[in-house]
Length: 147
Image (cartoon, rainbow, N blue to C red; front, side, top):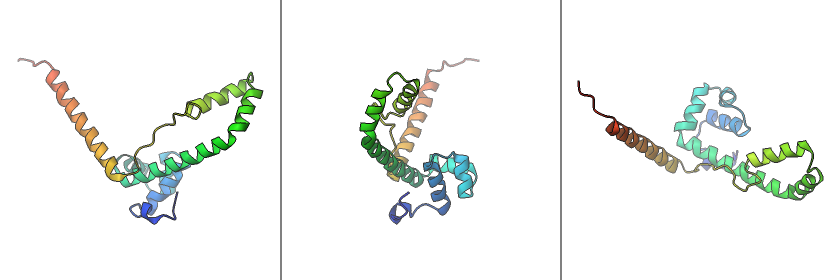
């Protein structure tokens, strides 16, 4: 996490920052909660409803993704030679499947959400509105029961 940039962290508590660090290491919400000294429900709530937390999490995930992409680009020559050398090796097939599953070979990395809290809030409100419309349409399609 970029702790040197206080503008990104000013709206987050120490507990939230500790949870973010754990989540970014790949820990579960329960482990992140323990690291932050909070209940795991708090971490789930932050991930669902705290737009500043979500935005910081997305920023940090994007940074990690960029670092990994740069690292993979540096390893591309070795990787290509290794795949060529072990083309028929079953372990190479497993490695290729993992890289493909992560989207690293297709160039289609998993999407990361916005790092703008207001945009995240707007998207959630819009999704909530669409759910409400879908619910109303479903009610309209339900045949009336006459007693």
